[in-house]
Image 1 (cartoon, rainbow, N blue to C red):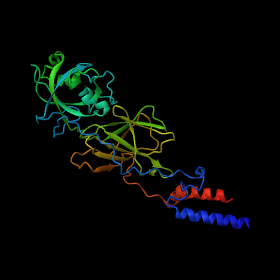
Image 2 (cartoon, rainbow, N blue to C red):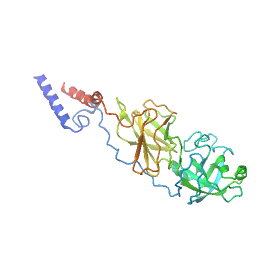
Image 3 (cartoon, helix red, strand yellow):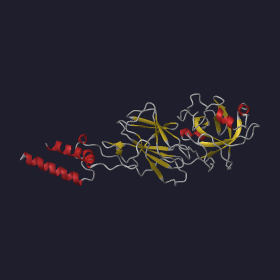
Image 4 (cartoon, rainbow, N blue to C red):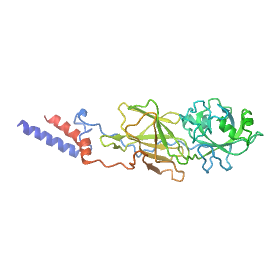
Length: 353
């Protein structure tokens, strides 16, 4: 009699599981400790936060990421310029800055860097932006545009727009052989306009920051063509046991500069896919760009790059140089049963005995 009653309970519970759209987990009549938690509400259709485009005039011609020049296309704004650091250096003596970039004395930055005051730095949202600069008011000025990248914060502006340039960038505005003469001019009047960034041969790269651990992930985003800046980063974890993408995006929080972070009470499950949105609203997706067994202080290069010719609504997807998975692979029957069916069966058996 007891066996028949247990069988009836099992059959009834299986019927309820089959009839319930979410199975046993989260349906309310089984203890949660026997079931995996229900999946989070999908956020795939929620667009990443888009920051309104800057009102600083832009040039349609692309510039080299480190210091190429473009012709005069109009739309110049007035600003003032100073310089700091070594005369032929990159600005900060540690070759870094408030954006989090490292080794800005090396290509592709090549010391052509600048601190920006708040209208340029934008609380870190302006990190990586590219600007053409030129000076014409001093006798040593060449008037030829040069391109610099915002890599640091200017805390003591002397005008509405203030570029505190590296010694290299400041001297680059001079006529041939008169770099030191211009650097001795002190504060000078200059002109600037925003231009698209371009990093030939490079793709969007993610550097895992020191201090990252299974519950805390911080990444630096760099080498973005086009706007060059980052308005939002979203992360997608992977599920066990097959490490396929979950399909759910989680917004990361801006930590400082161009560094974004995610904190969790539970360990984060890699590999991680990352979606980067720039100031204009364009996005790229790097599928599983950070592997499951990632390391702090490591850089992971994607296969994606921003393309200004694409519509704003188009999301370009790509994998990593380490994993050539572009689309999520379907789960095997065994993996699906182990992930979704077995926890519910275990719960049913626990209640039936």
